[in-house]
Length: 198
Image 1 (cartoon, rainbow, N blue to C red):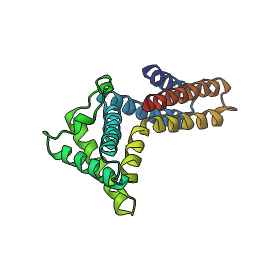
Image 2 (image 1 turned 60 degrees about the vertical axis):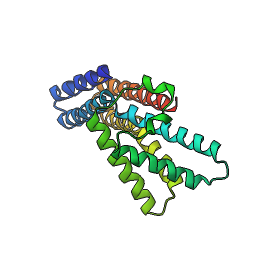
Image 3 (image 1 turned 135 degrees about the vertical axis):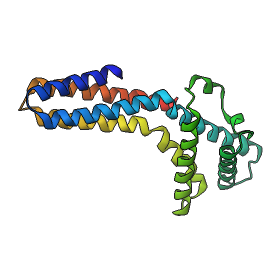
Image 4 (image 1 turned 180 degrees about the vertical axis):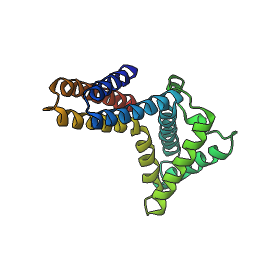
């Protein structure tokens, strides 16, 4: 990803030299977004969301297998309550639902985890308040969080593609370079998407 950022900044500089400041500014802004994404990966927040998603899945599976007659809504509500308790209570046993692959994920900073917990809780609560069941709100929120990075990368790829199209007549060489960058970022997005599914 670092190489992609360098290429974006190099291309922005080339555009600025040619007087195409509007496009250079757009690419600088895209590079800043990329840097923030890289920082988020470094801090491990995405890994935290993936881990939390696995904990919810395992919680549901364990409770469902031990209480097959209990409704999905009740089980999701119980898992949601346990997760909420884990936000406030460090001695909660929420981690028991993590599987062995958790050690392969980056660990987020304490502050990032705390903020992510509150954001997730607000998002789940908002969905429930709007009429969604807990059984739908919890997995939907987890999926939204997990797939946010690939989604952001896809958006960046589309932005660069749009700039490439705009520049196709003004500067075909830079347009082609941007097209290749957009394709590389699109591939990075797909790779991140596949990582979320593992």
